[in-house]
Image (cartoon, rainbow, N blue to C red; front, side, top):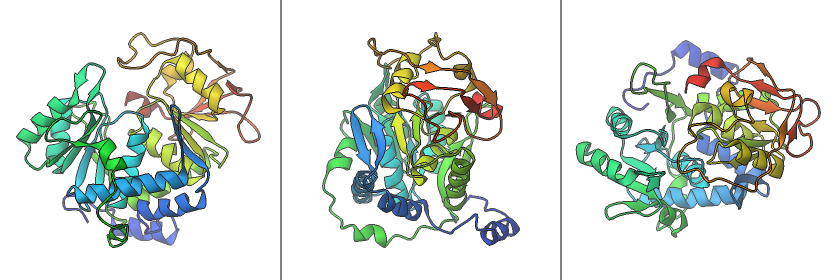
Length: 358
């Protein structure tokens, strides 16, 4: 068990195992089965890129080996601060394959939060874009590394300055180590698989450890509750690192079920309607403010989002809220949940009010 992490009470852990909730498998092992079972299916869509389950496995494996070469080791903490792009998904599974623990930061966090996350966790690395909107992340990470010597690596999506590693190069480069190096690693399913963040309502967000055992079960049971199947198509516009879009059932639950995940770095309604129509989306993560007024463009749309002036909005009809679970699900009634493309009818928005503060 990672030092400083409080384990589940023994009586709880025993009961969860007896009931079959915990399978004592790491997320890497859980998803190895998934990647093999659905190898030929499309797992991920990011802009024009379509990535199969087999490709996701292969790319994340290559990245995992290169991260080992870069000096990361099991139980190292890595602050991950990436938007909704395929590189986040590659990195998430690569870190799981080498037993590193991602800290689910958001691109809106700045030095105050990032330095706190790194200091509290004893992080070994930070992964960020080079820029997002008008903000220079490499300058911020450089300051974090100067003030917190434990942060050995700065990894950048985009142009990597001197002293930083390029995430694109780590993804594409042929690794020095054989794949057997991953097989030799031992990952304890009772250790944290990720550090999620609290809502931050009383200050800098706190770190919340989620173990391999409980996070796998969380996503599987949420997928069952939300009727996620191999025909499901999930659109992620909320920050992918958040607990809900990542794992409730989110990306994890959709992939466990053999479904498809569509990523959007934009939250503009016209962009989302275009993706709904194009990919026949069945599930959409939303917060109530966005769901109640899907036709309205937010007055404070995030800088750096690309507009799609030729996009024609789809239709969302007869929407209503049902607060029955942890997921924010946009689901058509009946059958597989599919209506005509871009026409999600009689939609049930399922969510929990406390999630909307995040």
